Image (cartoon, rainbow, N blue to C red; front, side, top):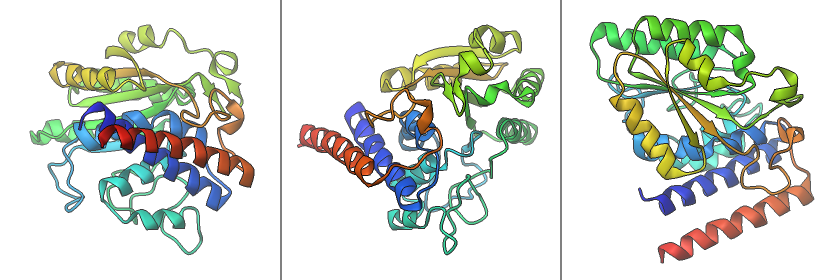
Length: 280
């Protein structure tokens, strides 16, 4: 895909993600919207996956370590063809199979159930280590939140990844600067994140998480890095794509009302129309 096609797909995923949260009147839009450009690049360009064979043993794996951002994962998987887009209407519904946190038993394409922050990256390390032991060629990708890295388990996982030289592991930290209680710098300062990750043995790349050239280049650097895991620090905007959600901690885990939803649909719809006209 070219950058315009990726941007168009990400905009459609953002529209689906907001719609899911609105219909359910529950969910986490802010951090879902911030990481959707990275997710789009992963599933539509970077990763070796096949929607027709979601359990292929040689597929690349993805773990959404910040598992509450399921609207981003589910919308991406649906647009990629793992299941019908119409199924997204079942999000957080008692009648449905698409739960509020990322869930692998009933949703095709999900490689790990997550929700307890810090545990997802540990699972990703285990997958990467298993691949190394078996001599498999697949790669493992994981997205963490910058609030999530306050969990000590994250650093234990990175230490293990460095010890076992897991160069088949690429962790992406969604650095949007906000978490449920406010600015990450106020809740529990973790900067400089790059120095910390390097101290734990990772190769670190810092990018604009909404720039597809940056994202593409970082994934290529991760593939060519040998003997150590790669951590990509993706600087992003929480709530990206919806004006009133952007850079607002209040939209970490809140559903829009009818008027707010209409505004979001107008803004995302206008972007989708603009990107579609560029294609024509």
